[in-house]
Image (tube, rainbow, N blue to C red; front, side, top):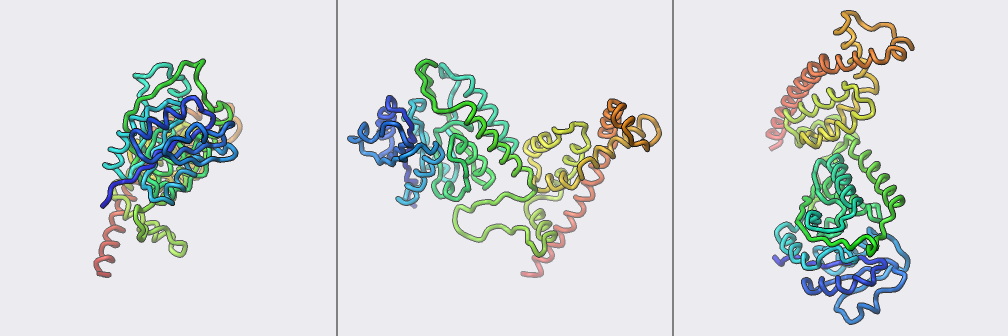
Amino acid sequence: MSGPRILAVIPVYNHPETLRAMAEGALAVLPDLLVVDDGSAVPVGPSLADLPLRLIRHEANQGKGAAIKTAAAFAAGRGFSHLVTLDADGQHDPADLARFVEEVADRPRAFIVGARDFARAENVPFSSRFGRRFSEFWMFIQTGQRVGDMQSGYRAYPVAALGGLAVRDDHYSFEIEVLVKAAWSGFEIAEIPVAVRYPAARDRVSHFRAFRDNWRITVLNTRLTIRALIPVPFRELAWEAGPGPDRVSVRRPLKSFLRLMADSATPRLLAASTAIPLWVNCLPLPGFQTFLLLWLIAALKLNRPWSLAVSHACLPGLMPALAIEIGHYFLTGVWLTDISWRTLGLEAWSRLGDWLAGALVGGPPAALAASLAVYLTAWLIGRGLAREADHDR
């Protein structure tokens, strides 16, 4: 079996001062280099004419993501197995391409991110430090995986996998979306350390526009988080063609959903994935339960579709209402029967105390009872499916 065939890719938009040095450095490590000129004001072709590289030019600026998509299509049509992208602005050290070559050979099916070493770099912008932490948080919420440098443009992409992901964004936020969807699709996200260089602020040229690009990232994270909240398993991509896993049938949704859950989770995991969302829905954290639940799903490695299905089954207001009733009874010895502006409006602070007491007193037993019921049900279903499989054989 032959080794990976790697194409180095430099997307460029108006970086004439640093592009040639980056191209020469990349060619010193890899023989195949593609420069995608994403509509630079002055075409870059003449300055690179004597270098043994390939060049594609977008007549109009389309965005960094669009440039990478163009490179992926080029690579797929010419038999390359991987892309390694590096920025044209001189931030990356082309010598680190050798690290990517080694890592791609060891992990050919992984998306590999070059984590920039900020500790050894000077002039690191505050926006880069903040953006790294911000994106790391949302990646964890949306996928349960921690990636330390989501915004690094120094990356290795498996061409076959990249072509199978439905990545919509064409701008800087492409680099966030592609990693989230790769994680959802079952691909490994790996990181290797790389050097980084930032010029002084007065010499720095950046095409990142704070309002426009941060707005795009906000819209993207909103869209990805909404998808992460839908209790439907993510579509996994097989590396090689073949039958995919069973999915929920339209004709027999309950049976196929239970079968899918039995195949992908143990009764113990399903029980934990029932107890946690029930208890979270009892907590007096209006507006924050969703983020807390997503964080707990990721941190505790719960079954995401099942946990979200349980959470959505708790009708809006039902669990808080039950918690308030239980808490009021626990604190006063009587049930709250007067539902009016006085009890819910003027006495809101008292209801908050009832809510907290109910969540602490009534929430855990209710969650435990539900989790035990799910455990026994999943165990019985698992035994039944096992007998059915033995009978079919």
